[in-house]
Length: 504
Image (cartoon, rainbow, N blue to C red; front, side, top):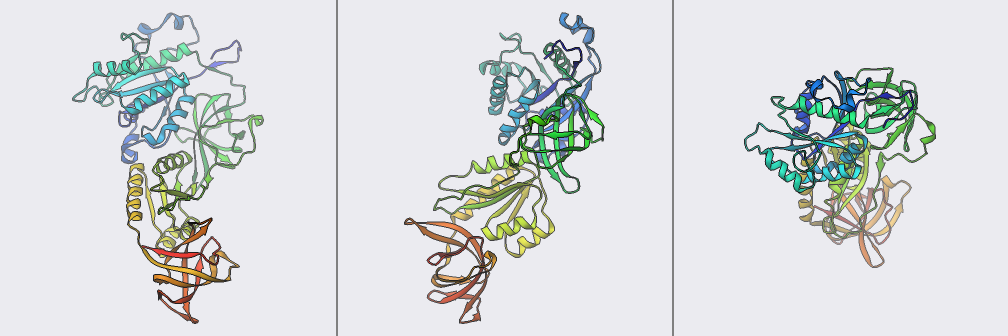
């Protein structure tokens, strides 16, 4: 807000667009930006936070200018810059939407005229109320069959959104993102609301703002999307967050053009962080805000103690926001009856290290909005490791459900008791001996280690058989009652008394 400092300058408003999935948030911005982002989004759904600048020329500046505006000589009435943050609508991205509201000065609450108030509409209203973010309502799709603006107004009133003419002061406008009807009027409302907020910044202050997104580019390294809130961000600046630090080696504006500096409320892409900063945290060029905290790009979960068949997953995503969303959605599917264990979670493409990890732990690799290295693919195919990737989170949820169905149908192929341990200098080449208790024990098969602790059996880890021997002779399989030697690859050291179980 404004102060008495004469160095302060007016800054453009940062506007977040919020609402239910498929209510027209991205297509509204498409029309405003004269771009076609929506068709390039996988499945037509926005799945990452983006920030964009536009220049809006007020169409009715003279007739709508308030007294407060007319008294401000420095307030321009034409060619006003507005920064938009487009937030995902899918329920997986609640945290990302909440961060958008914290970053923004104003919000547009999008409600489709043909559908009305939906669950994420209510959630968005709660976020806006909690963050005390002023907002305007855009009633979209007014040109669609079944559009009922009056019904939408009544439903908004029922959830406490009191529009002008309906007992409140919240401005609204009906719009069509196909024809553009009402969009200029909506942008005029944003400019007027921004003038009432009297947004300013100090160009001489250390640059500061928020991290919108962070990820790894195979060619350029760590990329971080930010939005500047105060000061002037310059190429060459040292930059800090609570979880990362670095130097602004490359500074790009939202169009991807390299620039020397950016002022508020500009979106920027930075290359130069030494670690990936956490999405949603603040950044500053002032070193006093920096504290050495471990990066959050890779996290390991504790082992599940459930007796039920466990789905082991290695999660990989193209950026940290997508990783958080994937972890949240898939993690919510875990239960006592259908446990999920996250072996590892990290940002980046799927690599051969991920495949090796999956081989050792019997995990499925799940990739969201990223690629699979050729080496990782070849290694996974050779060891029958499943890798599933998609740019649409619904597909990954569906696949997880299918894996659970397969786990429920698992049967024990063979069971062996460890009688002796001979060599364990390297976990990837443990030499042990045992007796087949039931079924058939096959060479090259994956197995679970079942260990009895305090009277309770639980899965301690997974591995794969590298070689089977009976009386120093290589064999392909061993039947119940046979005593054999095994060379196995397993990250967990096997103990005498353990059971190795092969399932199918």
